[in-house]
Image 1 (spheres, rainbow, N blue to C red):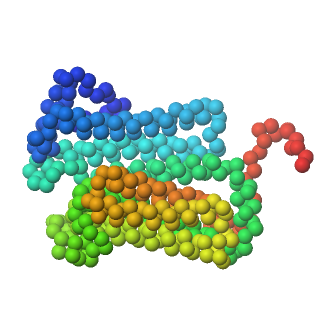
Image 2 (spheres, rainbow, N blue to C red; image 1 turned 135 degrees about the vertical axis):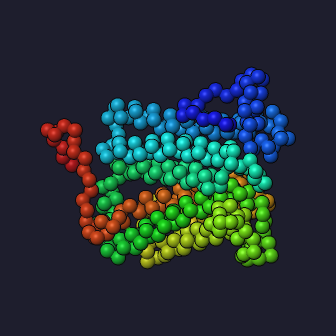
Length: 353
C-alpha cells in the first residue's frame, strides 16, 4: 500500500480499481525489482497490509469505546485517567511509526539499490519496539487494576516477612525487571534479523557456519555502524547472544527464586511467575534454534515471534507479582498500611464484625 490516512479507507473493489492501485505501486522503486509480480500477487500482499492496518484501528476502537463508557459511568479507578491517556497516545504513535516504516521502502532514494528493497530494518525494529512497549504498558495496567481489591492482602503478606526475606524479594524483583528489559532488547534484535532476512544464513548451531564468530563477514558495511543493523552476520550473531543470554538469566532467576531459603518470600503468584519465566524462556530458545536449523519456515518463524511475547509477558507478570517488595516497602520492613478506599457515603456506619 502506497498511501495512508489515520481513519483508513475502503480497499479496491472492482477490477478497474485494482488495476489503478497496481499502476500506482509500479511508480515506486520496489516495482523495479519485482516486475514479475502479477496483479494476483499484488492483491495477496495488499490484503495482508490492509488487514494489518485495519486490525490496528480495530484495537484502537476496542480500547477507546470501553474507556469512554467507563469514564462516563465513573468506573475508572482514581489516578488511572492519566495512564489511559498515555496508552492512547502510545497506540496513536504506533500508527504513525508504522507509516514512517512503510515509507522507507517506497522512497526515490532507493532506486539504485542492488539489494532487495525492503523497509529499513531500523524502522521495522522501531515499529516493533513501540508495539512491545505499548503491550507491556497495557499488561501492567491491567494487572494493576485486577490487583486493586487485593491491596490489603498484599500488605499483610509483606508485614509477615522478615527484613531479609523482603530484601531477597526486592532483589528478585530488580532482576526480573532486568530480564524483562533484556527480553525486549532481544525481541527488537529479532526485528533486525527479520528485516535483513538474516535467519536464512548461517543455518547451523552452535557455530555460524565453520566459525564461532564470523568476524570476516561482520564488518563489510560503510560507515561501520551500519553493520549493527544491516549486516546479516552481525545481526544474527547479536540475536543469538541476546537470546541465549535471556534464557540463561531466566533460568538463573528461576533457580535462585525457588531455592529453599528464598522461596519463603514468594506468594503463590510469584512462584507461578517464576515457573512461567523459566519454562517460556527455555522453550523460546529451543524454538529459535529449531527455526534456524530448518531455514526459518513461516510457521516456526511465527511461533518464535509469539514465543517472544510469552517470555516478555511472563517477565511482566513476575515483576508485578513481586510488587509487595517495592523499595519503599522494604525500607519500612513491610510496615506500610494498605490503602483504604473511603465509603461513598461519609455518614455510613460500617458493619460490626
